[in-house]
Amino acid sequence: MNPITIALFIMIALIALVYLGMKQFSLNNMKKALNRQDYETAVKISDMKVSRRLLGEFVCDLHKIRAYYLAKDVENFDELLNKMIHNYNYGDENKKEFLTTYYHTFLLKKNQKYADLLLEGIRETRDQRYIVYNEQAYEVVFHKRSDLLEIMDQQIDSKKYYGFPLGVIVYYMAIQYLYLNDKEHALIYFKNALVCFHPKSIYVPFVKDYIKQLEDEISEEKARIDESMTTY
Image 1 (cartoon, rainbow, N blue to C red):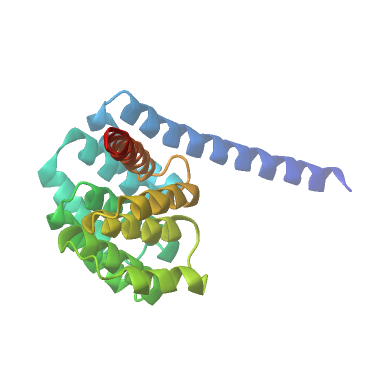
Image 2: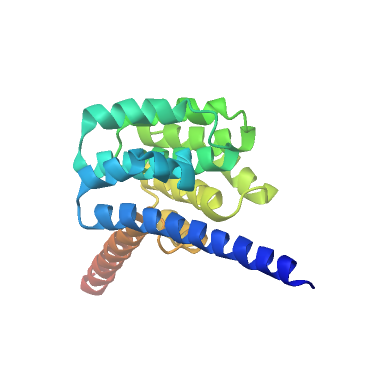
């Protein structure tokens, strides 16, 4: 290999390293601003042209909307949320990541206003498998439906769902059992849901709380029954 070729490779490698370094620096600055609750700075960094060139529109918007959400800046959050829901340039997987994160955040908060907006975006993906389990979760949360157990059980048996989507299906089956006051089955399904979710999933704290609550309630009920039997 001649010296010119070697020099060219070294130059390309250095340019790549500088580019990656700048990209990581910009991303770290946004994350650090969010972590120290300096939301204004996080927004400013996300809006910088250099940040958008290095990180792309989606990553910058994702951090920007996070800043608005944490800052409780409703006006700017609503505006950006609507823009992101109807932005078709992010790529399918990125769009689903955003929609899923915020849709389930607001489902758990029982915030129907934002859930409606995000479900509209989910439907626009035209991914029927993705749409179905999210619509079912909506029905369970906001319409208190408890008649979806059989069809959701069939979805589990189909083995078309795994990971987070499977966890969502199992979680909302557990919620339906709660509506039916079937604590034993609810506990079983919450425990199964816990296995499906990543430990850092937004659902995990809720699942753990339900498991503890149900275990305590079932234990107390059994203790009362045992006590009454002994007394009898």
